[in-house]
Length: 551
Ligand code: TEU
Ligand code: CA
Image (cartoon, rainbow, N blue to C red; front, side):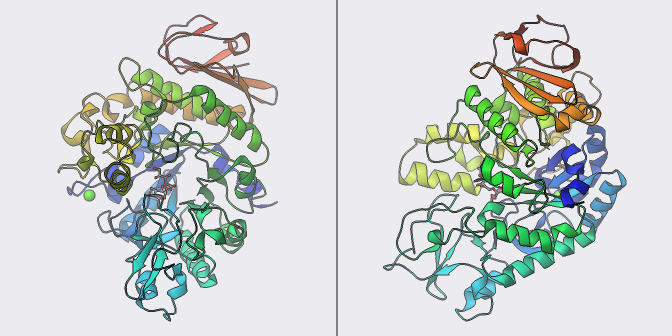
């Protein structure tokens, strides 16, 4: 039996993502910490999730939410200690909850010891750990652009050369062509697995195999920067050397993945990763050449994206399902309607729409409460390097957006929407912290909070709980094939899943108006879950209604 046949648990699992800085503070410094995660494990157990994906909690330089790691084997002091981490792992395992860590190995912080050595001289043994190039005609080697705006090359005076950084200038890209780099990364991964962690979410893992053209010192233009010729070779090597030795799950964050390349990344023979994160659905409404846009979402386009992924991967590879994470706006604000009276209804609907598809569902902290985007009014309220760099480029330098336009984009798409503190109670600082929180608490915690939802059978929380239970009860949700219905309908997202003689019918109304259902999408069979109390008309969905039935 090969790897993935043995290890099927990741297909049945539901993952909950914890952004530790914003989850729960326990020592009164206004920032969430690992002890805070421990203190909320019973809440997560109650919700019924199987796996926690923990955003980076390693020592870092404070530039990009922990994605600028300066020591892979140390816990960030602001989040706690290694003893706290070990206890978290132990307490989670006691509750049969697995812990998946973030693996950020496309780049390190420029404060990492490897980089300090690398930059110190051209003949330092670690020089080649990073990607250094000579100037081209006195300037940058080529026109490669950072994901966070501006050139991807930073000049370093010590040796008069440029290093590559695909993200912030404090995040230098590692050179995966260097075998020693790979060796170091694999050792570090073994070290964490030996501690007993249950997997890795691999940050921008499609960028480790860089297309050689993008690194040419030729003054050339910005070129594709992901999934070069050695990408899959590196992942298969990592799999052989590390992953295949443990009973773990892996998910590759792969912004460039296509249905076709997913058949390599997440193939069912287990030779690379367990699953991928693809971006097409969350970016379906992105602006022409950047993420910044104000929507609107386009349901027909969105459905076609899901259809392509669901049918393309069925029986061949495995996918993740997510609406939101720490890089995305809130699910209900992006895909539902966060205005009353539709917020809770639509939060449930988008949840069911996603959880009934094929793939491993990810719930981002607060999504299970229907938490919403934050009403940012000033760019200075943002803590996000992506926002500030984007502002500098798009508003200040090239004046593509007026400040008002850019603020509207930030409210719609900014990553800080997902990073405001978790709303536990209606009380002070939403029960997140005794002290002034590092990010503002959303004023709507007065009525959107965990305390008021846990024991309310009609809450978004209780609805998510049932979605998770359904997955454990009906194999069709895990294994069924997918057929999209009503493809051109601009209000209704309806599909069926079929497996071993059972058919699941999911019908969702993505609008504030009633929606007519075509015959194939009309409710029949046993009602598994819905978000309205009163039964409705068979051929009509009410605003933001979802009905899931089984025959
Ligand atoms: O994100 C990768 C990525 O491609 C992001 O640029 C993403 O598209 C963007 O944040 C959307 O606004 C990962 C992490 O999830 C992110 O938090 C990090 O900032 C980034 O890598 C660098 O490590
Ligand atoms: Ca704290």
